[in-house]
Image (cartoon, rainbow, N blue to C red; front, side, top):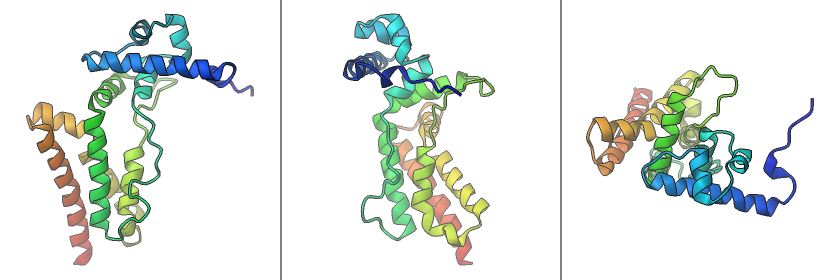
Length: 203
């Protein structure tokens, strides 16, 4: 099988890197105006030819994914994480909610496109990368030996469901909470899920 080489991975890499960065900045500027940018709009804002832009981003979803910064940290707990699971969860949830507020517009745009995509398509683009799930697993890892794998997985996913852009959208747009109130509600929900699990283990 012949593997295709990404356009940016060969020849004039520095120039291509600058072009990609310009397209992303153009898209962010459009997003700041309250509009979900298309590839064509980002190209126009950056002064780059439409055909060139499509060499970097094959569709709107790919462009929106690039707007949100890559966060590849395996852990949000730092070099000396606490042993107490509640303290670990507080650190992780605080970090996640701060990221949600900082990048809310980009995350809302990604969510909208993800909802419009056909999940059964031949080449679905994973806008949601599962980083928050990984970080939540890390926070709750002291409970791994005390819960069955299905129980642990359920706690992780329930916590992630309570803390994310989806929850922020519902709490602010439907629940009419301020962003500060919504974040505090998400953090309260995460703590309540953990407390319920720990209390059950103690009985």
